Amino acid sequence: MSPVPRIAPASPEALDRAVALLRAGQLVAFPTETVYGLGADASDPEAVARIFAAKGRPNDHPVIVHVAPGNDVSAWAATINDDARTLIDAFWPGPLTLILPRAAGVPDAVTGGQETVGVRCPSHPVAQALLSAFGGGVAAPSANRFGRVSPTTAQHVADEFGPELSLVLDGGPCEVGIESTIVDVTGDTPVLLRPGHISTAMLAGALGKPVLTRAELDARMNAGAQAAREVPRVSGALAAHYAPRTPLERVPAGALDLRARLLVAAGRRVGVWSTVKPAADVIWVGAPLDPVAYAQDLYAMLRFLDTQGCDILLVDALPDTDAWSAVNDRLGRAVVGSGDG
Ligand code: TXA
Ligand code: MG
Image 1 (tube, helix red, strand yellow):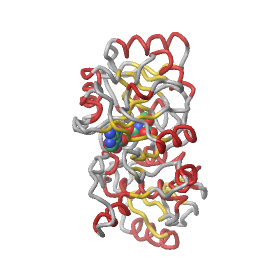
Image 2 (cartoon, protein in one colour):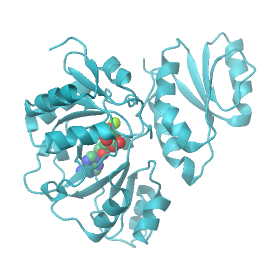
Image 3 (cartoon, protein in one colour):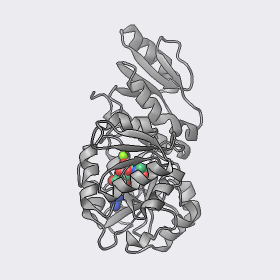
Image 4 (cartoon, helix red, strand yellow):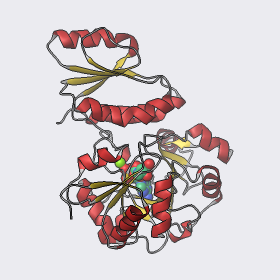
């Protein structure tokens, strides 16, 4: 095995090699439209265990099973109710993960021992080519070390791993840039477990009924309006996640320049990702004004600024609207988890 992962364009030969590795119980990193995934044969508990070892991730955290378009989801899910069917028809292939009741025989290593399984059909052509050629489900978390910034290029993946990963299929930079939306459709009311490019408004539009966030579900349960329901664990929902090693701070847009000046005056080396360039002497990268473009750049920018030897990173606090909710979610966790390196 090579000491560092080899990055290979997704040629027929590289895809053959990737399939052979998966069949042998080894790991393969591959592009999806959201972020790069660290894949293993989802039907092989030992292969899935290699994912956890490589990531340094607690092994009771469930992983998403990726399937090719047209692949039989009932191999993974015991039931596919009307809501699940509607969302599959509306958004697959695409950046949406459904939490479904697990089918018999799905390894505990995949579900984290829970009675549910996360399934997603990615739209990236390289992911689809790999999944179709492999034929089975591929368990894949984001291809980063636990708690760190998710990778949106093949190089990001190669930077994170050593000999435990031999092959990274290169499919270019990820278009969406943040992880899939996750919806639990195991109950009467669909629950949003992780916001993403597919918004609650889009989900509700397709379903013809509202989708609750976790906080809304909790509020209803507290009010006794709904029978207690166990909502599954989502590791991406930990407060500290997606984090750069440099401390990261969100500053109200109008106050960013002043904050930067004070830090610079105190001798700090400051990195800034903001829509307006601060007058202060900082390392500055311009941020897009549009939430879709912002999400696409987010992780690459956090990674880039993390390599600039800064004492602190500043970003604009963004609008508190539905369109920005997935970006705000990831930035909030990045702020909490930042600064331990
Ligand atoms: O966009 C994505 O979803 C990417 C790409 C590679 O597909 N994958 C990804 O995987 O973000 P990961 O492991 O980094 O995040 C998956 C999240 C975790 O927070 C996990 O807890 C949750 O999905 N999850 C998986 N199966 C679940 C289940 N049965 N119940 C609740 N949450 C689940
Ligand atoms: Mg992840």
